[in-house]
Picture 1 (cartoon, rainbow, N blue to C red):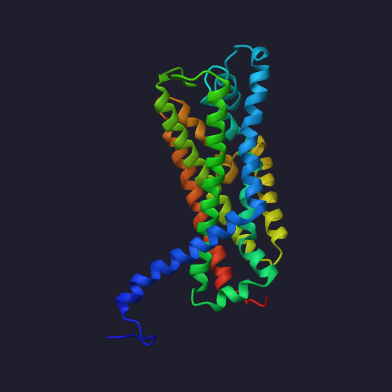
Picture 2 (cartoon, helix red, strand yellow; picture 1 turned 180 degrees about the vertical axis):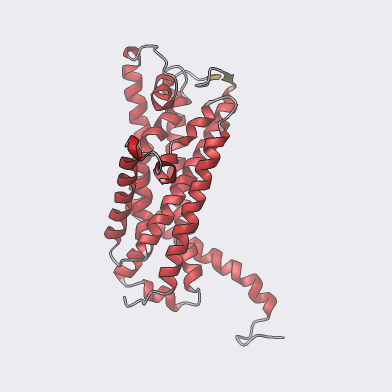
Length: 293
C-alpha cells in the first residue's frame, strides 16, 4: 500500500535516515570547505607547538617545586613527560580560543544562512525545520570534535618530539604506563568535546534570534567571558556550579589515581543540561520563526 506521495511506508522509513545523512554530509562539507574554519583549525594546531617550544626554552628555569595540583602542576610536569603537553594545551585553549572557534561555527549556523538569504531555500526543501536544526547542531558538534582533535594530536606530536616520554607520574603521585596515558588523553579529548558541544548549543540558540551571524558569535563570546568572570568571584560561589565554564577544566581528574570520575561526571551532567535547555530554546524559536530572508 502506498502513501500519498507514492512511496511505500517501508521505503520512506529506510529513506529518511539516508536523506538525513546526506543533509548532514552536505553541512559538514560546507563547514570544512570554508577557509575561515580551516584557518581556525590550523591556529588551534599551532598553539600547542608554541606552548611546547616556550616550555622547552624555559624548562630549565622552572625549577622542580611541583605544585599540589591544577593547571600549574600540569605545566611543571611537561618537561618530564611530553604527554603532559596535551593537558597543558587544553588548560590554555579551553579558556577562550577553543570556545571562540566553536562560537564562530555554531553562531553562524542559522544566522549566517539567514543573512545571505539561503535559509529560506533550505526550508523550502522537504527536510523540515526540526531536521535542519538537528543537522546544523550535529555539524557544529563534528567541528567541535575536529577542533579538539587538532589540539590533542598536535600537542601529542610536539610533546613527544620535544620532551621525554614514558610512564606518567600523576598529580596524585602514582605512576601509569605510557599507553594508559595516551588512553587518558583520549578521555580528556572526549570530555572537552562534550563541553564545547554544550557551548555550541548556546551559540545555536542565539543564532536563531538574529540574521546577523556576528551578533550571535559576539553574544556567545560575551556569555563565555561573563561566565568566567563570575567564576572567579568568591562571593558568587553558590552559582558557580551552574556555570558552563566552571566545568571545562574538570578534565584534570584523569591525572589522578583513581580517576576523579565524580567531578567529571558532574561536568558531563551540566553539559547535557545546557544542550537540552538551549537546544529546546533553539527548537522553539526556529520552528516558530517567520523566515523572511
